[in-house]
Amino acid sequence: MARILSLARKPLFQKTVALSDASMIACSRSYISEMRRSTLKDNLLRILRTEITYESEYRPPRPSASSFDSFSVEDRPGEQWIRLRRKFGEVEDIKIDATMFDGAVPSGPPAAEGGEEDPRLHMSLVVEVSKGEASGFDLQFVCSAWQDSLDVVKVYPVSRLHAALRPYMGPNFKELDDELQEAIRSYLEERGVNDDLAEFLHEYMVNKDKVEFIRWMKNVEAYVKK
Image 1 (cartoon, helix red, strand yellow):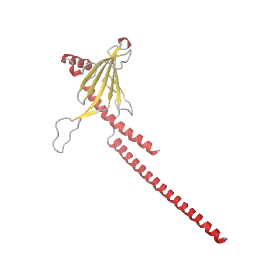
Image 2: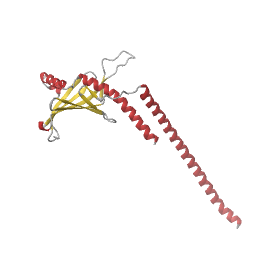
Image 3: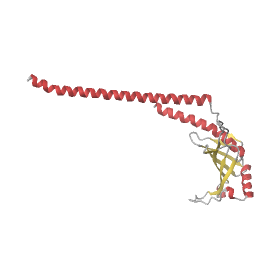
Image 4: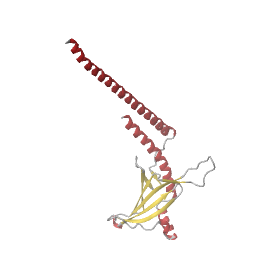
């Protein structure tokens, strides 16, 4: 009887040992996996902190301007655009929505071998001139802003009463009569929408790009730390 019980216990013992070994292996793998995740996380946090320190201390952004000429500047933290506002005369409200850099072209002929030239950065503007509810329409201008110049792309009225699904937006600006083009440019320049504004916006957006990059890294760091 004792021999029979001994034989019966042997497979049970072997099974228990096997389960114990499997459990130890699983725990070991889990520990190694957790250690690896911890190492990767620590490495990512270290790199992020190094970059944040470099951008904040060695290439620090300036405080953002709150005005330019007669315009007030409304920054949009965490977003890729800003808004400028001003009054003109007794009835006109001017609003400008400007994007961060959304394109670039070569600044000139290819540089000599080994040399590099900074590209010409581009941003888009929508300028809205409003005379209030009584006018029935606002006038909008789509513009391209380069570092040293501002080009008009489109001019079109927008109804204040109803929004058309497919409004007629007029021809491209360059298709207009030369005299009409010049008159429209003068209209905008009188309201402060000119090459000086384009230069200011480029300086502002270079700085905003630094601010947003640091903000982005800090947000990533905060998420990874949780």
